[in-house]
Length: 161
Image (cartoon, rainbow, N blue to C red; front, top):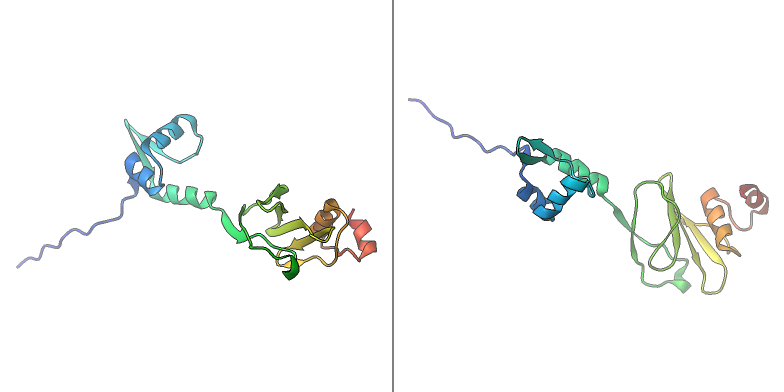
C-alpha cells in the first residue's frame, strides 16, 4: 500500500507586475513607469519578455524606504500644545522645519529639536533631554543642542562656537 503525499504549497520567490503593484499599494502603470525612468527605484528582473519582482528584494527596498514616526518635542508643560507626528529620517539630516515650525535634525542617531518659546527666546532638546536654559537666538540653541552645552555654561558655550 503506497501513500502518496500531496504537494505542499511553497511561498513564491518572485511575483509578476500586477501582484507587485498590489503588494506595494501601487499600480501597474506606476511600476512600468518606474522601470522606464527609475523614479522610485523598485528592483525588478527582466526575464525574457516578462518582468518579475523578487519578494525578498521588494522587502529590502521597503525597509530602506521606511521612515519612523515620532512625536515632535515641546518645550514645557506651560507651553504644551497637542504634539504633532513628524516623519524623521533614520539617517543623519540637515536642519528641517516641522509642521509646527520647530527646527529639527538627526545627528548620530539623536534627534535635535529647537523651537521658539512663547515667552521669548529659544529652547533646545537633544534626544529625550532638554538643554538647560533659554537661548537668545535660534542659532545659539542649535549649536548648544548639537554640542550638549547648556545656556549657562558660558566657558563651554563659547568653545562650542
